[in-house]
Image (tube, rainbow, N blue to C red; front, side, top):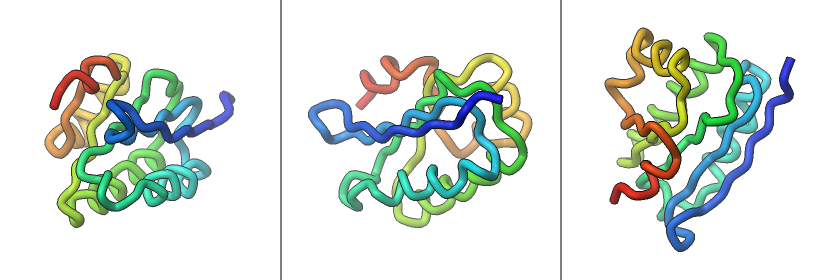
Length: 115
């Protein structure tokens, strides 16, 4: 079991929040993911990127956490974007329908270059 870690960073001159997620996203990760999102100043939540490039596993509770985050963001006129999904996670996101609600970037770099 790979330890879950989360790190919040700000890119593009400090204006673009990026939540870097590594390890396994399960029910145990929910509180940290939500707290990380909520720690972002309200005026910087219009676009938040979740970087999955170091994520090794996600279960149904982890997907429920992502859905909750997407819902919370859209209720506040913000949007969540995913970056760095591997092929398997991309397929999972397609199957559960999350790709209808978030913009998917192949990498964090490609997400950062889009305005």
